[in-house]
View 1 (cartoon, helix red, strand yellow):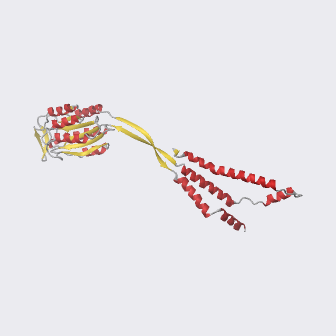
View 2 (tube, helix red, strand yellow):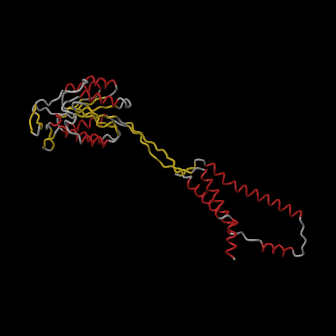
View 3 (tube, one colour):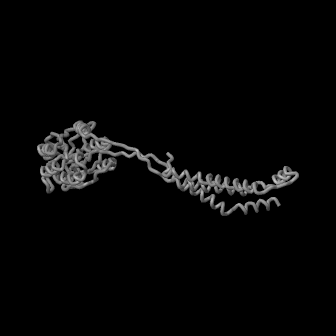
Length: 345
């Protein structure tokens, strides 16, 4: 859309017209005065007038081009002073989404083979990747971050709107990358540290774990109380089955272990202290239901507005004016008339 920042500059276009009218009126008055003071007596006055009219020089081409260049010069300068702009519409999306921090257990127990997909045994980590990946795809307007924890907790991705990058980091996650232990308290504390910087009322921590708190320096309940104080809700997901003997691959061999359960009471307390909810995932269908439940609980609001970004266009009329000025300097009216006489000769 075309727009002039100083449209009132258009009145400069009438100044040459006003000046021409005033000068023409002055010349007309002076001519009338000379005619009144001078009396010409001639027997053939009509013939004399026709002779002078025939001898009157015609307007030269050089003078016409010179006047045209002057008009172009004035038009270009005037339109440049009017500051023409092209307004490009730009839509801004103001997203008031939630801040979701995923804290995923990456300990050795995530290699347990107590899930099955289409009759084939899969690890807990593979199930978490698939379900949480689909969960991330549905968080259209939310900022998502990723924390992994084993013996220690690490921020793998800060809060970001780039869900694809977080999903890619999650897909590349392997068990034991952060050690064999389970530092749930440290993971919650790290999540609180990152979420407390965000606006209140939209802070959510999703804790995915399959074992007891066996490492770290912060007790999980103390970290949860700190999260509640900061207005952060924790949704805990216990990944595992009710089997007493859980198959797992260790040192390249398939074995069974009976100590791969988790403290369900602790996971439930962590959620209740912060006003969140606890879920137990015993199979892939349960994890799908958890994903749907969280989508129902967490709503987002979006607001959009359109602004117009101005792009200045004064260079074009100014360039036209400079070109006209250059031609006036290179071919003034006298030189053009001289060239015309040489051509006739």
